[in-house]
Amino acid sequence: MFWFVKHLTFASAFLGINSLNAMTFDFAPLSESSVIEVELKTNGSFALAGIKGNFSNIGGQIEFFPVNPSLSSGEVLLDARSLRFGYHRTNTDAQKKNWLNSNEHPKISFKLKRLDNILWKERSVFAQAHGSLSFKKAEHDFSLPVEIRYFRAERKKYDGKRGDLITIKGQKTFNLGDLDMMEGALLGEISNDVSVKISLIGASNRIRPLLPTRLLASP
Image (cartoon, rainbow, N blue to C red; front, top):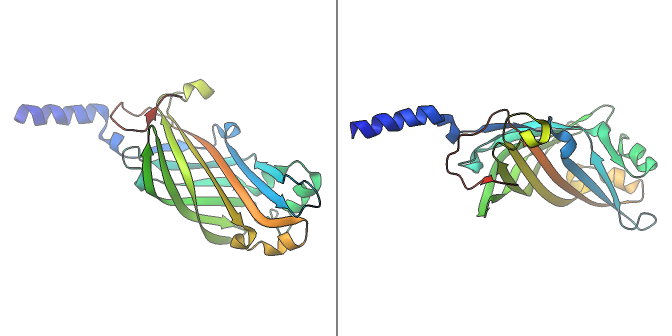
């Protein structure tokens, strides 16, 4: 028995007991491969299919627990000034005071507080991500459903560096009033409904020891 405990302790030290703890993933290194899309509905006077825009400056990181995803936390950072649509007028209007007010508040952040309602399906984990959205100097409770996948030792394929990858995908439709932006909607041809779609890629600077977890996947 002593021999077993001794060698189990050695094995844990060799593999890294922290493998049961969080892995840190940074969104900035592969931000060009990430997408945060905003779709605005119109009142029918133009762009009947709606207007889609994207944030091009994405940062932040997540502390992700592969063995127990519910413990995960993190933050996604956006530069409001980087939001661009297919229409010049919409690009300009989106930055104005009654919309993003990006001159005074260029930073948008979502702080992940917890994941719950976790459901495993094959090599993905589906969950509800709860947190706070900091927007124009105010914080709003915000949640959305997400799908998370973990790719061990796959970072090298993207930027040649050693490490793991994580992908986070989700989508939510909400009302501008939820973010106190009703005034902005009333001034133009934009309706109150907004759809946000996220597809984030986070990069770790280390490779997790190959221990059992349902999230380890291949592309």
